[in-house]
Length: 564
Ligand code: AMP
Image (cartoon, rainbow, N blue to C red):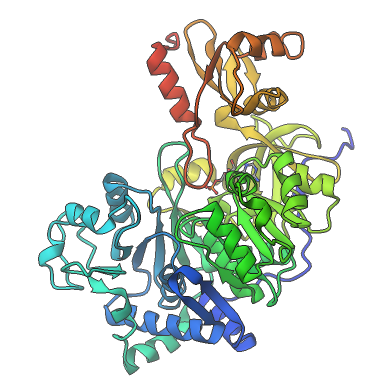
């Protein structure tokens, strides 16, 4: 037996978990900070205090009840970042409904899958945004809609769906205008709401989020009030948010980054939610930070890069900024340093997590040494446990690589109506197996070093793309690089590199090979080296390596040798 420390960490708490439902959390905010701004969305002309906001939420919740939606019913929301999204989020929670957050980039078959999978009884939908015409898509999916009595829809493909609530105009036949719903609730519904406030439980499911599909198959992650209200609270505490803070939220609300780390951090800490626009736009984000004097800014790494590289970047006064979060994908150290220095975000943090864990389990602290703040995902969150295990499920020593598993209040109930897929990732002892590869050091700081599924096995040897990517980033002409495996009939898999070259530079595959020669082991030098303009990515900034793999394999006709 050795006394070498193992990769198990448990977050010491400086505050107890909240034992509230989301509705109670909002009522508390409205009592504590009635006149402070809750939600500001300049492009929608919205500036609501916590008192106004809570009153609007109550009216909408009463309207949902008047539509006949009952406790536990699913209500979808399909829109970019708008104030109506957030009203729906809180009103659904108050009415005891389960909010189903639908990616605004979804198209017909994905939308049908999501609505049918969880049996949505109502859908709040935007009308259109840029090239997405939501109402057109809905009319194609539900031909019965145009003739339906609003609120009494009967649709062959979606038998549970009764009400389509339309945000914005022009109003389409068969739908209920969003603003009308808040006028539908009467005294009876208000009474029911008051009763619900006492009967809803914080362990009730309140949200289903479809995972972004880096693996290709969407699953409905089912989360409770307790899961996400607490995660929002501890994310806010990690940044020391108070009622004097104003969070600029350009990240999508349909994803936990916006709705938990943004909206629920705000309601538990009293900070203001500031929306710079419906879809991400670097210029609008910089303008909003300046005009609204935001103190915190969120983003996935690519958003921060777009802001820093904007031609007008230097003209903005960002001195109000103090903190914020970069998360969602590996955060390059160089970008973190620029955010820290050039955006005045001296207390910027990195967070790591996944939808299934509400999402955050690691976050750097505002007073961690800069080196740790820019180069690790920080330390374990309060009340949460993490262990790193090898392929046999044994906890590895500190400093060794393995799969990160999370346990605690933040772990989802499961995937909606998918007991087998749930059992694949959630074990009997309560651990969520994340599929992420991590290393935890002696002081408890964590680094995410890749995804298990991205690991390439070439001739029986495990190769870690992240390691090779980091080496290639050092090449002065390489702007960005992704390494992934492709099928090979001799080795099982071979490495392929997709490289984006810096503007104005040229680079050849032979130059890249020469750069690697003698510096990294020969089996880590990619067999295929290709130059591309961009990588396939999800809206939340995740690179979709499976698409790259499919593209290369089908173009080159690659297949693996058959095995027994
Ligand atoms: P999602 O469920 O869409 O939030 O995606 C979760 C996945 O994003 C995780 O399993 C990680 O692979 C990745 N991820 C999130 N945050 C980070 C981070 N700070 N560093 C590296 N990867 C991250």
